Length: 171
Image (cartoon, rainbow, N blue to C red; front, side, top):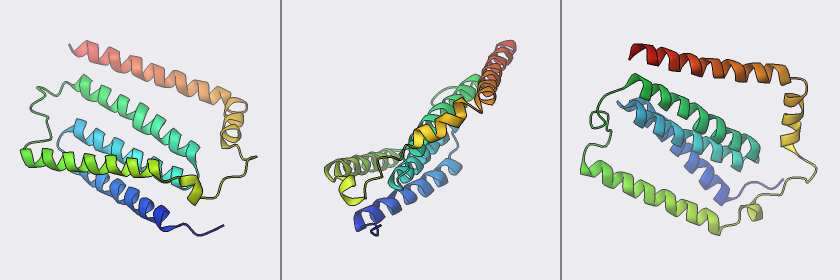
């Protein structure tokens, strides 16, 4: 296998630094909603690292499970706690913070545009065609471990119903 090129190394370190920076911002936020959004940023960066390391299925699961489902549950709990008026939990205070956020957003948009122009398969060697990671993971999950998988889904449903019942009881 050929050693990764400069393009690969640059993006690996970029997503790594974005993940570390996002995790520091996650820990230092006062607002739980802003902290959750920074955690979503970290999850997307980690997913990009998985995709770059030739594990696209794990990257997709990272986004779907953690950035999607877990963050929805987290924000659902924050909404049930009723934190007060939205202006009290706002994290962007001044004009300088908004301008900085705009520049960071433009930089990330430029990064996506550069990634769209450069063909990543030309840099990374293609995976063998007989490799099918999805069926390797799905076959045991839906054959040998079907009962624990379904029991877990029923327990999660019961937890959601319990949370709604507890929240309605306080009001």
